[in-house]
Length: 96
Image (cartoon, rainbow, N blue to C red):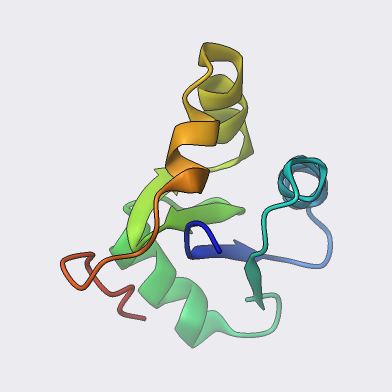
């Protein structure tokens, strides 16, 4: 199964596409939440992630940042470890 991944995106975001492509290459399943026409959800996302940009990526309830951040984890060889970690009851819920 692997990690629980949520990616908050917009329709017009190239970095969102690249983030999804990276997870697709890894064979990682993710839930995509489009915030394009959802200013309420976008505002909540900014609070939860402490970021204004998309994509915002959460792995097992923890904010990981955007595409640049997960690409850096991939270069360091740390992304696979995160993706292999099963969700646990102790993981924080993403509250939006």
